Length: 421
Ligand SMILES: O=C(O)CCC(=O)C(=O)O
Ligand SMILES: [Fe+2]
Image (tube, rainbow, N blue to C red; front, side, top):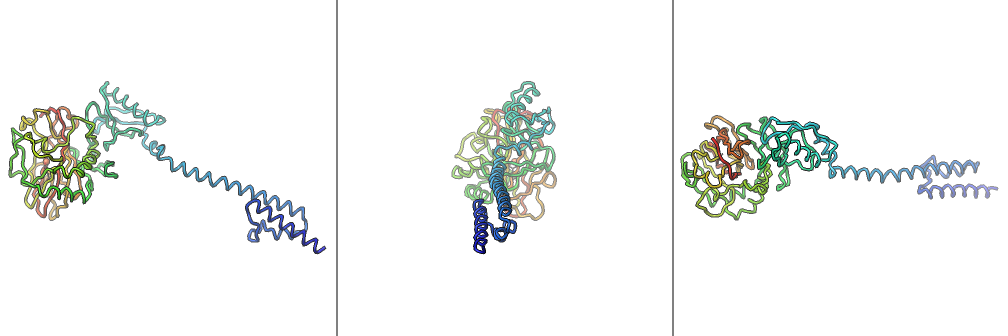
C-alpha cells in the first residue's frame, strides 16, 4: 500500500512537472501556487489533476499573452521611431490654420490664407502659391519662404510666410530687434542663429559662423598679400585711391584658397537664404568685378587688417549712381548684401563701436568676435530691381585701440539693377 501510494504520488508529481514543462515553465517550490511537490502530496487525485490542469492552462494562457505582447510593443516602438521620416508630428506642429503672407523683408502681411491642415504639405504649398498669385493679382509667384530664408517645400506652412515674385530675392524680415532665426547651414552640417540687431538698416548678427580654424586659414592665406586698402574714386570706380578715410590693409584671396572659399560659398548662400547658383543676376563680387582692367584671379573674399589707430570712416557699400555713374553702366552691377566676418577677437579696453552712422560714439555697435558674421543690406528689399538704395546703411570701422583687427568682406552683388536716389 505504502509502495502503491508512493508510486501514485511520484506519478502525480511527474505529471505535474511534465505539464509545466510542456508550458515552458518549471513547477518549483519557489512558486507556491504551482508547487508540484505540494500538489502531489494531496490525497484527492482527481482534485489534484483538476487544480493542476486549471493552473497550467492559466499559466499557458498568460505565457502566450506575454509572448504576443512583447513583439507588439517592439513594433510600436519601431513605428514611433519611424514617425519623423513620415513627419506627421513635425508637420502638424507647423500647420497653422491661418497663414499671413508677406512681401520679401516686410513685417506687414499683404494677405491671409486659410489653410486646410488635412492636405499634404505639397498640396498645401501649391495652394499657397495659387492664393498668393491671386492676392498679388496674377503676379508670377516663384517661391514661398520662411522667415529664415528656407523654402517651404514638403512642409506645412507656419504662421508667417514670405512670398517671392519674379526674380525677387529673399531679404530677412527685421521686425523686432532681438528676433532670432534658426539658419540651417547644410554645408557646415549645423544650424546657426541669426539675431536682428537693427531694423533699418537691416542688420543681423550670427555668432560662430566661421570656426576658429577657418578664421586662421583666411588670415594666413591673406597675410603675405596684404597691401594698403583703397577706396573707389568718385566718377570712376575703376580707379582706386589711397585715402585717409580708409587706412587698413587689404588682400583679395587667391585661388589656392578655393577649397575653403568653395565651402564658404555654399555656407554664405544658406546664411542669406539665396541660392547663388540659381539666379543669374546674383554674383559674389571678386576683384575683377570691380576692377574693369582685370587683375589676377581672386576669390570673393576680401580680407582686412587694422592695426592700432587704423579705421575705415563711415561710407556706403553700394555704388551711388551720382558718384559712380561710369561703374553702374555696363551690366548695372551694385552691392546688395554685405556679409562681414570678424576673424579675430580684438582686445577690449573700452568698448569700440564698429558699425556707426555718423561718428564712433553713436549708433549701433557690433563688437568684434572671432567667427562672428554680420549681414547688412545696401539695397532696399522692395527696390531690388530698381536698385533702391538704403541710405540708412551707413557704417564704418572705428579706430582700433589695442591689438590687430582681422576681418573679411563678402559682397553679394546684383546685375541689371537701375539705382534710384
Ligand atoms: O572694418 C569694418 O568694421 C568695416 C569695413 C567696411 O565697412 C568695408 O570694408 O566696407
Ligand atoms: Fe563697408
